[in-house]
Length: 315
Image (cartoon, rainbow, N blue to C red):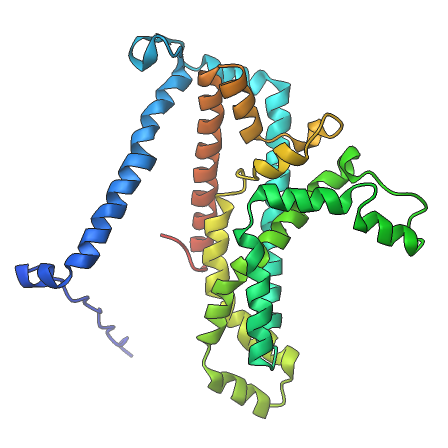
């Protein structure tokens, strides 16, 4: 039996006439603005990467500084402090990714299950307000709440869970969970918006059919909501994997101290220390290049794995 021929879908070609340009000129104008913004602030600064291969001095500039090749990169990977900062950045980045990702999905699903529309709007509004707070305010709230005389220690001691207050910022084992909690509290409501939008686009007939078949709330979530969210989850996961080495700067820099320094410093703090404080711009640039290259590699690897496993991919 001959196999049926599959018809190839031909996409219509867009022909740009002068009439079409006049009709679309507001969109084209904004596109030019954003294109220029990307060139000026994202691509032109890449010329500064040359400093990583020079013994750069501000007096001599990019064109007259001495070329030293990969000397700065060799120093980086022989520096135990930098290797420690890679570990810290990777650990906090993965912890933040998992915590914020899972909590955003759970929060969106739970919020969607609320029967009261007014209550849902109030909870959603309150949940994404922390996103608009600066990290200075967030870390200040955390510092006050987790201090020896803060509300957390006071509640735990009054409930006799603790015999004496804990200095959370003096013990290394608490620092990474504190950073993860800060990211979850600040970004969960905001990150849940896109999942809520994806949930609202699900065909209500699917839920009605599942209810007729005897599915309860958990059955609907398991067999309809989560499978329908799968493409959105995969795309966002692929996009966020590239930010694993961008574990943060403000939280670690503000809440970190000498007692937890070996677990609080990240690549960004290393770059600040050497690039600004020590005036070694070449070394700071080399550290930044390393982080960017690894981030791009992570996205490419994750996208390749997604393509091979048949999941949604970025490209």
